[in-house]
Image 1: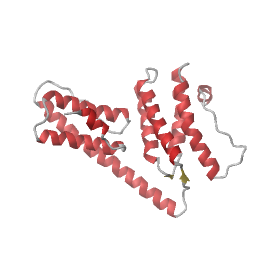
Image 2: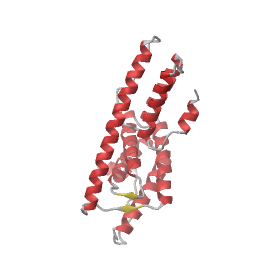
Image 3: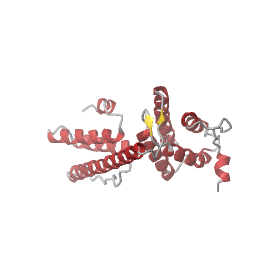
Image 4: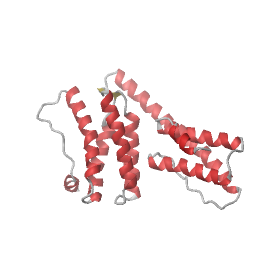
Length: 227
């Protein structure tokens, strides 16, 4: 079993990736290709992937006892994860349908992104995810909230974006998170502003905002003033 190859071949959509990991586990189990430690390792990779990407899938921790019961508990949890993935994909589909009908009747605006902007935002989201996960200055609650917002931003990132609100929501919370970085917040701030400048410029251009509208700089002191 080569887990590195498996991870390299996962689809970009995180929900599809988790489901594919679960299906692969079940298939390998069916053909008796997993030893006890393989099962533990495979399950840990699945749960870590979920944590890193801030997906709303809970109750993943298992108390391994070193017995055959562990395999049964893992399989039960794998099936629960797949049900959660189905629920989250249904929520995404419902949101897309809602946005489509709202767009058809002119209730929301469309924003068009250039391919290079999409690539820049995608790469920067991945860099932010790494910074957040590796930070020892953010608590687990803050990390979880920021990661969930990054996941929502990523799910709305298409050639035509119907709603930039997830991006501005992340920008607001980033101000509070920035205070936790003390003097080490430059890499975090740089990447937040890299994304939001693209968003701001696209909105300013397509909504024909007055030239007096300037990109709102994000600093930790701004966040303090909101309290």
